[in-house]
Image 1: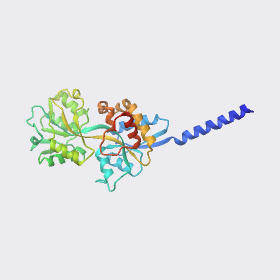
Image 2 (image 1 turned 180 degrees about the vertical axis):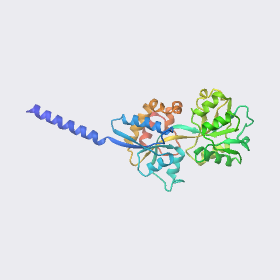
Image 3 (image 1 turned 90 degrees about the vertical axis):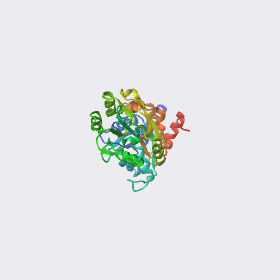
Length: 315
């Protein structure tokens, strides 16, 4: 009789245990970028890492983009999202293009940076940013972040250029052929169009002036100083590196719907399996793990902050 009772009790206990595990397992929605862009494969890799954890059932990728992804978090349509840090700061503050402030936006971790870079042929007479005056300069297509950023920087310095709105590969070819004088872009550290350019031509970087850098950083807490490129050996005929203003892709979370335990688990899993995530985007391979905790003006989720403190990456 005791053995029967024990068996029944064990079965009931096991059933309760399994039921509780199912009850606490969570489904997540992750707002991602467009297919074909660099953000999408990164989120696929992150989703795979998260789905390997016992406390999560599945991760649904929600198509979107940088600006709409911030709104998706703010309006509770997703627990996680990938976006550029300036967009997240604008959403947090309720600045344009957002009509309201989304105070529930928190940062889980930062990813690779995009760095304001001006590149010219090595034999060019352009030595400083002021020398761009009157030159043919590609600033990227209208509507792209770099197009807006370049116009802002040029206006700050009082520089008028013959602006060319070329896509990156077209701009590279035009610079190779001598049809334009410079390219202003925001490449990641391992940026294929510039790697191609620096393989076939000797090229040089033109730095922003220090006052412009300081002004940009003072205006937007998501900007920070870093060196481009982080790995100069990838650019065989590049003659120099520069310190410049940067901003990263980041993973943000809804601070109200993402528990501290869940945020901690996701951050820890991504950090401990970062080589799997880095395989999805070349520039992540040069990222140091402590840069996941980079301060870009977004409050850290308490769960992520706990993990970063344990690693000694923040105080």
